[in-house]
Image (cartoon, rainbow, N blue to C red):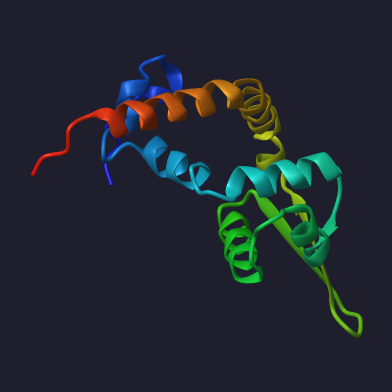
Length: 138
């Protein structure tokens, strides 16, 4: 795959949306529903976390989805999976250096989300109200 964008060294964010831009692939990883929540939970904990502890902290995630998300993050080099040879086996997850480097970004997105939640809720309500009043095509 040829690199078709020089986004890393510029402020031209538009190039990151080009189909063959490597940044687009990374952005799609971060856009996954659970990725930033898992990374943020690991960051907040500050150390190794067992699977069930992670699941308890991530309200609404299924075991299957958490397993898939952790595997993908491990594959991408963002999460480290450590298996201890005990009976029963003990498995812990922690951020790699690369994963930890996303800490500032995930924290900033969390802060932004909290600060703007009400504005988004209001915008959705206003949109739904307007849409309900518009004539529907026959």
